[in-house]
Image (cartoon, rainbow, N blue to C red; front, top):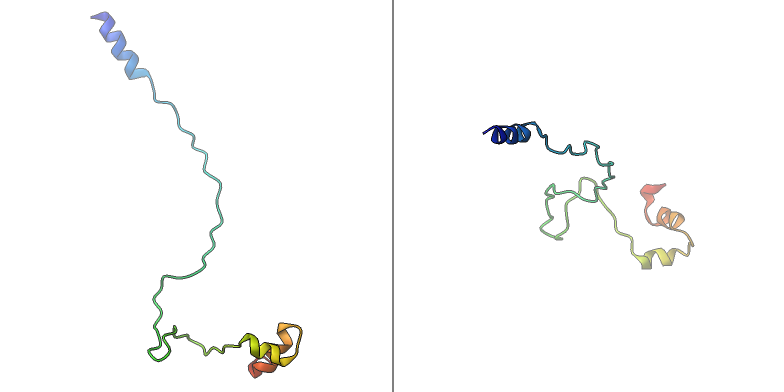
Length: 81
């Protein structure tokens, strides 16, 4: 009986191994999109935007004759002046 009590008391005294409480290093998170629904223009099938957008093609850029994007866009999109 004494042996049984000493075994039980030994079990009651032993504590579980301590787990590491060190926090994992923080990671950077990059948000590349949104799950917020955007209305679609029924005529074009493209997302409706709050501001008007303009598309400039590669051919339009080439026709300007500029070597860099900045001057070519300033010529093609007057709002950029």
